[in-house]
Image (tube, rainbow over all chains, first blue to last red; front, side, top):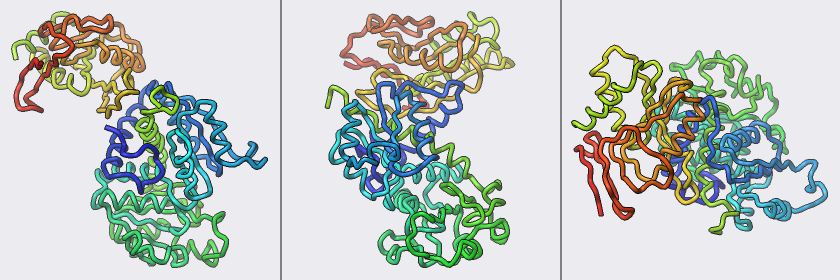
Length: 313
Length: 164
């Protein structure tokens, strides 16, 4: 069994069978991560470049660990301190790296569609680690695995995505995935941070009241307020955001049932999440991080079948 | 099945203490055999603490670039350091599965000894120098033939079929 796509550019291109296959494979890799020797030789013949044009610690380290645990060779490339600052184009940079016989590219870029552009022009398998405001597929997959671990399934689970939906590629990927797998999705946030036609476009319900969204849901995935993305001031102040949309223990205790809290990280403590929630036993944030390595191992394993440098190409 | 009882008795004969022995079934089809053998052994020594695990070798296969396999569960909840490990599989054919299983085992620790138990040994088909220690039945077959083992739990009945 293989995935229906050659690359992982977005959840949009995946079938529900693909998603199930990835999650099932990720479960087995979780077991590998418990062993005394946390390594398997499956990708010994594969070289992977981590092409990060945008800052990231969490995602890049997670991918790097996943690659090393599969015994692959890894190269890290970050845009600052490279010839990108001398004006080298994306395609030139990648072709140069590929001439050094690299089989797979894990890419994060601030332009939506950058990995799709690359996929058209180079033979290596491309994995999207976040492109602009488009998608972040591995985040949605690890979120799904975490929900599945907690609830035993995805179908019928009520998920509330809370925060800056407009600028969030995590929200986009999560919406695609949860709908494909039969979960129910509500987006919640200030009206200025929710795209105007999202209900018709993505078939999700919009809820402006935090309390109502939390009462309805089984799990709340809380998104970071992305200060660096906004050109206009879309809410009056961080303090006001926290007063109206921030989640504190007091808010959680006021609900009629116990819900699970998720966050893709990094957390702005005191803005979208208070510390007493982030560190509580209702939060599965650290399990999400743990699942991240397993999910990325699964994706790399399933896409590795035809290395660009193999004789078959 | 008589053969399975006999194999279980052979294991009982050769194991002096069960604290230093581990039985490991190979996913996906060796599990049906290892489940049955371990329960036969339990009937004879109901008080012994048997160490029984399951090993999936998907990540150690040598044909990973020609075909992608979906992994099954590996569950070895004990240390194999210094123990005698008995690998259990249904059919021994080329020996590549067992080669992969030994590589996987080495990543779990250093066993004292590794032995192999199979229900069916296909003689003269080995592609690697690997031989079983306990054999249910040895058969002669050629490459174009296929040996299928059916189990009551999964296929409705216990049967070994030789297909042309």
